[in-house]
Every structure is written in structure tokens, then in C-alpha cells.
Length: 225
Image 1 (cartoon, rainbow, N blue to C red):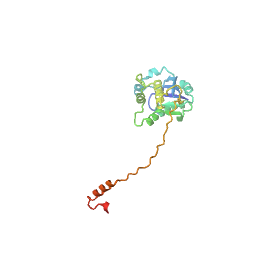
Image 2 (image 1 turned 90 degrees about the horizontal axis):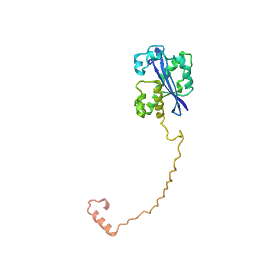
Image 3 (image 1 turned 180 degrees about the vertical axis):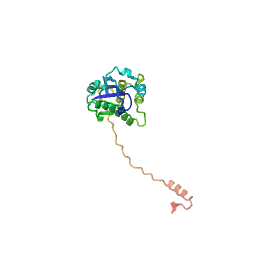
Image 4 (image 1 turned 60 degrees about the horizontal axis):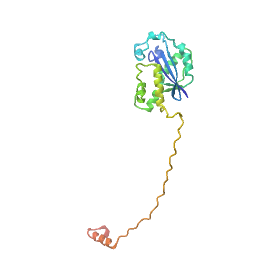
């Protein structure tokens, strides 16, 4: 099964406010495991870079001026993702930006139904816990020492690892999805218990006499009624 871990970087939070995509990173996965095939592009947004966004990803206006605009990379991007499901951390954000860019070019938008939101997966699996990418990487022991700033390709690679863990982690052995044969457990033999006849205990004459003597010491004894 082919899937794509996808991440974007942008100039801001809302494309309707004039913000644009500046980086796309995609990592191909087969059976939830990264294959090594990637798509990566820096994109000239044709506008300035707000300081708030620059502090997040470190992509300056000067750096991005030397890269193609979205219309120049759109077809290669769409070819790479094909019709595969898109694994995205906070899918509504990235899909919203990508669809805004695609629709501005007169291209069909990506359907939200093909997205797999790992934020929602994490919140369902770990209710009440932090669901951001850094927190999930720490939870699963994924190395983030190189993540000084956000980067679409780096984050897509980390997301692919997180997604694998959210799906249950790597299976032992080489047969993915195939149960390994195990040794048959020994059959348990259950023996039927033998029933013993109930014992009858009859008091002796001395025991009866001792009991009667004891009853005589009790005033208004019920046993004499």
C-alpha cells in the first residue's frame, strides 16, 4: 500500500489573507514504511516573509527568490503523490494551503477524504497528551536533534516515523502482516475427580451423656423444650 507523508511551510496561517506555500516535502511509504523516495521543493511565494514565519522555518525572502513559483512545481508534485493517501500532521492546514494554490492555477483540489490526520490519530491513541510532532517524536524515541527549525522534508521524514509508530510500529521478522508460526502448546489433560461417599459421624454413649450434663447447666435451655 502506497502512502505519502506530507508537510508544507508557509508565509503565515491563512491563504485567504494572502499567505503562500514556500516549501513542500513528501516522503513515499509502502506498508507504512518509508521507501527512500521523496519530493522536495522550495517555492518563491512572490511576496515578503513575515518575521513570525521566518522564526519558524528560517526561509528568507532573499533565499526563496532564487526558486520557482508554485505553478512551476505543481505538476511534478501532483505526479509524485498520484492518488495515494496523504499522511499529514494537522491535515486541514496543509490541505487548505495546497488547495488554495491549486485552485488559483485552475487545477482540481485535493480531496480531504484522502488525508490521514496524525494529530487526530495521536489524540485518540493518547487522550489528554500533547499531540505536536516534537512531543510524539519524544514519546516514540525518534531522534529530533537535527530539528532546530521546521523544514517540510525533515518534518515529513519525522512524520513518516511517527505514523509507523502510531500504526503499531515495526513488526519483527521479515513477513510484514504475516503471523509467524509458533510451536503448538501442549494439550492440557484434566482428570475427573473421584467423588467420595459422605462420612457419617455417630456420637458415642459417653459423648451423649456429656452433652446432656452440659445442657443441664444452662437455664431455660432451648434444647430441653
